[in-house]
Image (cartoon, rainbow, N blue to C red; front, side, top):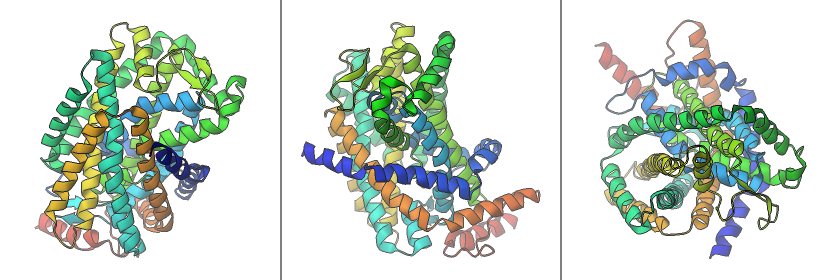
Length: 486
């Protein structure tokens, strides 16, 4: 079984998917005239604009919800595995996939807004919705929904849960089974409370955890500032095989950098689009720009913070191309994962690092688990949009909680491999979809820029742009506006 899982993961994450992710990001960056550079100031402003409603959440709440999915164990353990198997050069490719991926994130998130619907009084949307409405291919939409329910409901939560109990065990000696039981209990209380409770928790925890983590990282970097230029040079040289020690693993640097970059920032994977659809905005491009900015926060800030802590302090190992020997072996017996980051902080702040990273990872991974449940539930809602089957949501909750506990007591390697399979399947389906249905998102950006240039607060009218099947914007949004005006 283990051999089959490894074979399937290698098949899904073949070079074809790596180049598809990079190529799609570059393509959308060009098509949007590098909106991730031109609109970076506007992205920040839009993050704190907009109001929540009974059906939707504010832009900031949607950002917090998407960041709760993006900022997780991939920012700590994922960066460690990227360096361990791809060398320091993998970090450059993580940066590149984030920069280019912001273009993909804009497109998928804007499409999610354009084709969102109201289901039981709440906004729902995502790839399954825009595949059906934008492409008119219902079976493909159902395929994505089923794949995503399996990935976010069964495969991906295990990576986060396993990292939580592992780091807590290392730092505090907590029993794995007891930690898993407590984790499952707290998650159950939140997910049975619905989307509003999930968003409420996320908007409090996410800013706190990200700022605290970056602050400690900046402090460590400042205390070793003389080593920062050499760290930059090592990353860039290793990325292009200019550092002789890592020249033999440049292919692995690209592969691991892209794989872990997508796992972390989720650009093009389709998961962030679900949170984008939940936002209450006057124009879809607004949320598209906010979600593009979230990719920057995840990778260029949080992942970079982790990478520089490891490289500057020298607390990392790098495997050779065989994966059995070492190119760099500075930490005997420490497996790639949270242990690298714990050792990095511990080397500067003895007695503090293990506990700090364990608590950081607890917050990071916990909120990601909640986001995964929301994504899985949204796709259940898609399957139930014409016929209400409440038992499906209940069964999802039971399977989800069981998967979390099961992964707490399994080894980390299996959990990560299954997680990679889930990410890869969603990425394949979603990237092909957004390449096929891209036009409405590009039209929305031009319309947004045109209205901004005219000094207006952009309002979306799909009929003027020739966009069909944007049912919410054609009907309910206009109705709500008339109600507000009266």
